Amino acid sequence: MLTFDQFADRVISTLNLDAPDDADQIDEHLDLYDQLGVDSFQAFQLIVMSEALAGSEIPPLELPDLYTLGDVYDYYRRLVHEPVTRTSGRPAE
Image 1 (cartoon, one colour):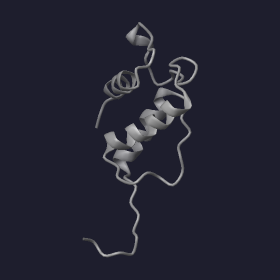
Image 2 (tube, one colour):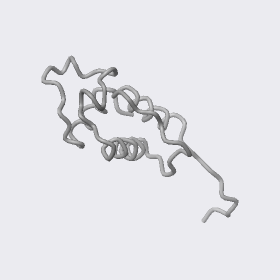
Image 3 (tube, helix red, strand yellow):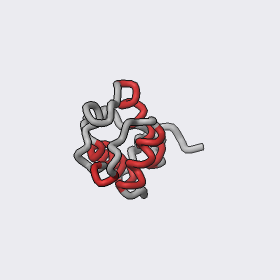
Image 4 (spheres, helix red, strand yellow):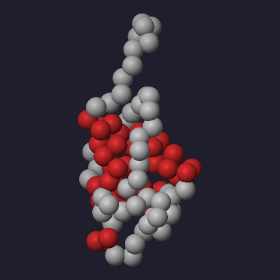
């Protein structure tokens, strides 16, 4: 599992976001939209990226509310600790 700093670095570099110059300002309270300039497409990319980093093969039924970098990291951590599983009634291959 990635630490918050590792996760934040990955998010900021992958989405090419405008991060604060001072690394100390990159914390859980950093606003995705107002401070990092995330648009709606990038918000969706954050969800997909979190699921991929967590190794989740099946996305949750509801999209999470993401407002801060901490919200995205919490979503990632939940996926790591509580992977989404669904049974389809079909036998395993």
